[in-house]
Image (tube, rainbow, N blue to C red; front, side, top):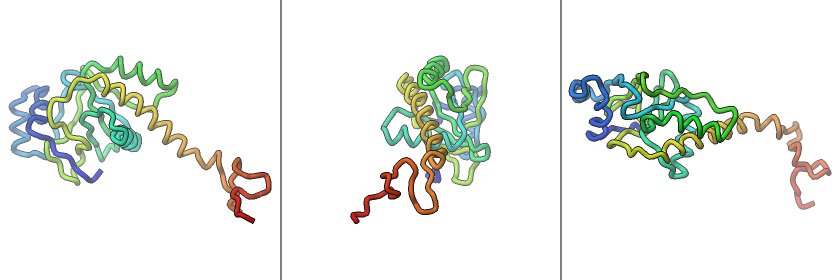
Length: 193
């Protein structure tokens, strides 16, 4: 996450368009491109907030599988991440999450009536708010982005859960035997003898 992303002029225009005073927001960012901004959600975008570890795994899985993903931000102090979705996607996102699991991972969905602090157009690596994927233009309002995030958020949480409990199911004793993989002769591996 040390590869800090920078917002393009078109991305800044899109993001600032929801500010109470878009021109003032753009002027402030021109004067100090590191300056975070507080913007309302639910107009041009909604945001799904996750804890950072789950967010990093989700983002990594989306990128590795070349699935649609929009802007993504990091709040280093709060150790959280925010995934931008098209506005008014809450009902669809939550329906898709609950189609994947009965016990969804923790997340907050920010939509109409909420506000979010976003990174400035050009944050530095030491800044609290940073872009993992900065807006470069007005993102397409694709339902695939919503579906991809819902499915991968659940999958990433399940992967992390399995990794955390791996040792409980496949514990090794002090001789290196792995329970459940033993050949019945006390050796987990055929050593050719």
